[in-house]
Length: 465
Image (cartoon, helix red, strand yellow):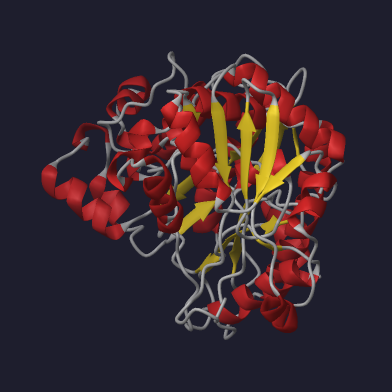
């Protein structure tokens, strides 16, 4: 938790941006697994609630009455039954005091508050819910059906939250540096463990354990697979095989809920083959290109297409693509190899604020994504960069057999693709290199004091050592 003043200042700024009405920010509830008392899923507070109210306890709601300049933390104190099983916790009043909120009320008071605001025809601002229990609570309080809540959510509140959370303060950056340090330990653990015969599940389990051992949690379900061509490849019980590549995409989330997200692709045998290096070097250069062009005022969409052009040029040199580079990129031919965007916003969520709709978070009026083109429709971030943004830089090249077959059969972009040569790479897998970069006054820099090895010689030397 940050200082009381941090949360007080944030709520004051939010009131200035939204201007009038009543803001309701719902915290999350526990999520049992297979029966009510089996809280198998670790509790994770809603990020926006955390941003403005800072408290990790379940069953809380923050209310900000802008017109009357009144802030209230709503929730019920736990009873003796819960204390017996889970121990004592601070009262709701104590929690409110820690973050500079003067007023508290039991959960039953939220209905009265909403009824009064509705009767006075005051605007009630809420964010689009992503959990069904909160959707039901909104339905119960405001009479808005869950199917209509995304459309009825407050755009004034969404825009204000995106504006505030997009630019990271010094204390937030410090927290993300801590996440990056744990992420370094996670990835280097994987590099030490990778060898033929070890299972994907074993490596991934050890990686996750590193996060937990430092008081953190994983920022998303760890991806570890020899099938790097599968974007979200879950680790299997299959043993690692000599000569193949292993892709590890993982990150940590600190105790204060700020995230890291990195990807490395490593040779199971400890040395890249020349064929692997041919593809790896393209991804490496695309990754490093972003470090030279990303800066305030530049559209991240332009960074994405700069990467696409470089990738196309280099794949042409290998005989995998052909034709005019600009025309190929305009047609989306490169998306056979890069079907996702260059990166996404980072912060308290590993895909920061994605619950507020990616159109609102990653784009503005001049950078709306092209939703009808494969690959381009998967862009998560295109807007102009600002100092204090944290974004991922994650180009990749993937050989997806089913996608290759589909495009070849339909003739899609055939004038730019050498399918006969591409066929010989169907057993290759995929390569991705990903880092978190902070946009600075004049450019950008990596987050994290220690650099997770990614240049081929550095990866090989680390694995050998």
